[in-house]
Image 1 (tube, one colour):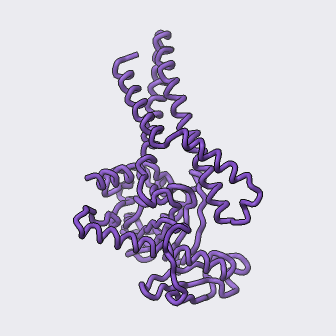
Image 2: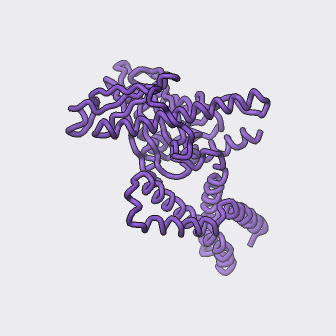
Length: 371
């Protein structure tokens, strides 16, 4: 085995060992055993929210443990592949070396991706994520772009088997959406997706311009941690005004025929949330309250962060402004303006291939905090 290959394998082993230590493999296995016992309880589904949390955490933990063990097994097998190279000659040796190098490259990528998971150590990082998307400047193109972004995140979640629950979609008159609110229900989704927060910018030939002119449009992405029962976010009924109205846009038989949609206003702050995707008014009220609590929790977090910054404890300016450009014309590129990471495949990105952007964003955020 070449010295540089041996050194690289030692480096990969050190990185994976650190990942295993942070994940605490033994504790993870113990937690899986505990969750499996809870999942086997026939009374578990008497509380739907708790049951879904248990099964979601169990699925995530099992996948994490399985992935860590698979990476360790493959890394342990890699030296054997290089030994086989030494036993071959000519074309067979070249082919064996190419296979071993390809596996080493793939392992490096997968180990580094798993290392990112260990960087999610913030107070709210383990939470599920609540995502709000709003069309910005750019008219019809902005509404269309907002819908493209919603599809991008939903496709990403689907590819990773994460459940998505849509709370509200406000459709624009001609095309696209004015806004949408949905939850990605899996552990560590807030920590993962929070780096997506900010202004996204699209440059393309507008399909809505009969003169075929280039159009720049914007959409805002807001990512919040889903509120849990342990959070002290209690809202007095006197602080809430609830208005009901008839849902609009695509829906089932009862969605557009009754006053089931809910608009909830938090009177002290003026925060307004809407929910119209459930069939009953009661379900929409429950969903709207979850969104309102998440927004109030985020407001509380930002106020505490600002107060700490004033006390001289550090803190950086919000990085949630313009953060990514999607250019479809005159060239093809998607670029993160904070990390400088870019790819030349906008169609793939808009189809949900955003893992590399998430990874670079998480690493950038960690460096920014440390710096």
